[in-house]
Structures are given as C-alpha cells and as structure tokens.
Length: 243
Image (tube, rainbow, N blue to C red):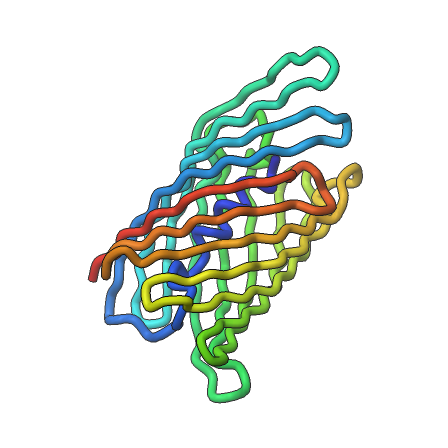
C-alpha cells in the first residue's frame, strides 16, 4: 500500500489552481486538509484498504515554495483464505519539500525543480514502507495553450528501506471550464518498488472548485491499471490560503 501515501502527496503537490501559474505576492501562506480512501488487491489475492487524512502547511515567496505535509492513516489487510484482518494506524511519514518555479521565454512557459525529504512514520512496522528516510528529486514542465495547461513530469526517488529506488514520469492536462471551476487528468508511470511487484500505471481525474478567493476544493479519482495493489482510490482536498 506504499502507493497510497504517494497518491495523496501527489494531490498535495498539485498547484491547487489547475489554471494559471503566476508569480505570487511577496508571501502567500496556505493550509490544507483532506480525506483519502483506496482499495487494492495483492498478488496473493488479499484485499486491502487505506483511509487517511492528509494535512499540509505551505509558504510561498514569489516563485519559491516550502511545504510541510503529513497524514493520519488506518490500513487494513484482509487474508483471502482466513478472512483475518491485520490493521495498523498512526501518523504517516512527514514530508519537507522545496520547489523553485522558473518562468521561461522559450517554447515552455514554466518549469519547476523540487526536492522532497520524507521522515519515518510513527508506526515502525513498515506495513507501508515508511519506516526510514527517503528523498525525491523531480521536475515539471508547463505549457499553456488557450484555456488548457499541459504538463510533463519526471522524478527519481531514493529509498533507505526494503523498497527499490524508482524512476517515474507523468503527463497531465487541465482546463478552466469556468472562472472558478476546472477539470483535469494525469497519467503516471513508476517503476516497480519490489521484485515481486509490477511497474505501476495510474490515471487520475480531478476537479477543482474555487469557492472563495481564499478557499478551494479538489475532488479526485484514481484508477490503477498494471499493479492491483491499487485498484482504485478517491479523495477530497480543501485548501485555505491567506496573504
């Protein structure tokens, strides 16, 4: 179920605007809380569910962003033969990230570079592969055409645990349907984290509603294709920002 923590972090890392990417005022601060639920199937046909409450705090100065995020989770795995349920819960990994957005005068409109450090979760059983430190380096390119954003992302994650280091890549699309409403999708590939698992391929659909100048909501649905540790997932993210 390592995928699940990465998934909600993906949504914490969304611009939350799904529209224009522009230079911010000198300082912009935002907080967010969400609800995440997913179901999956292991190779031995055991079923699993993960419920979590993702949280984050973000400070942005111009085109530089610093963010701290974590989550409270509950993980259940049901044995396909005995129907016995194994459960774990607690604080998930904490993440500290620094992102620099660069405005370009070339074909691309923007490109960002982000470094993200994760610290161990409170539960050392490592059911979710989160018992040790890790680091991720990523970059996303943004291209604006009409009312649409097209994005391309590449990343490499180093892990100091039983899981393998992995390369990932993704393509995204979002469109402003209304001034306060946008739709989008993102297709993401990541190498297998273990010899017994497969490369992961996931497609994400998301909707963002700007209910107020300072408040916005993002609803998302994720479907896994190749690695059934993720069958499907869904969640809601609420963000409040002030200057």
